[in-house]
Each structure stands twice: as structure tokens, then as C-alpha cells.
Length: 145
Image (cartoon, rainbow, N blue to C red; front, side, top):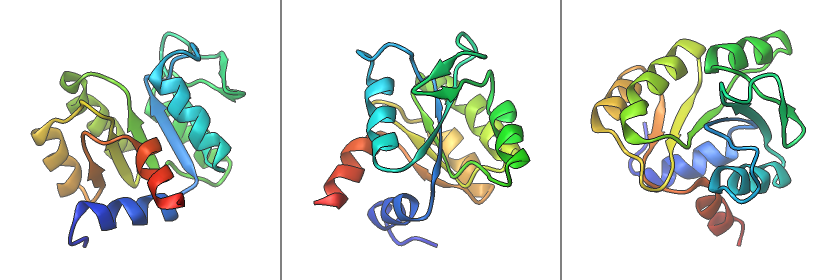
């Protein structure tokens, strides 16, 4: 168990390689695209999840309609989702967390401006690490210095 969010973030960023980005936009001007591109450049495999773009490629990776589809594709390769990075509004978090739990993800990351105490509690109760209202790119870059 983690004593604080900073140690959890450190463990999350050291202990994974597969980053499912829920709400990843194909538009390079959007924050989700910028953050995902940065994480990809740092060696993370990006797994786009966006039902509007399902079947297309974003950042060179196949975009999935749901976390369930993404998890199934990774499992076929012998992998799993390490972090679900959420670029959706807070009201979508309960459903995304439920999908993350069902998909066997290890962690849920709610980006800056996104938090949902009930969804966070549900994820933690299911054994997932949770970070809310912080940017994974900023946190990663700060630890790389």
C-alpha cells in the first residue's frame, strides 16, 4: 500500500509499459494527443480508446472502441493495461472505472481537472491505484529531471 500519492505515482510510472488513453483525440492540438505522444516518446505503448475513432490509427496504434476491446487485444499479445489515462469529464469516471476494473487494469489516472471521489473509491476498493486531477506528462517529466 502507498503512503502517499507521490510514491504511488512514482511506482505507476516505473512499473508499467501499456498506457490506455481514454478519449485520445487524433487532433495533435488536443491535450490528450500531446500527452499521449510525449508518453509514447518516453517508451510507453499507447493504446488509444475512443469509440468515434475506433478502427483508425492514432499515433500509429490501432484505436479501440472500449477498454474491454483494448484489454482483449493486449491479452492476445500476452499483455495487460497498466494505466488507464482518462481524458473525459468527471461524470464519465464511474463507467470508465468500472470498465478498467473489468479489463484488469492496474491503475486509473484522471487528468488535470478530472476527479470523482466515488469512482476513485470504487477503483481503490477493487485494488487499483488511482491518481486524480494531475497530468501524467507533467508528473513523468518532473521525475525525469
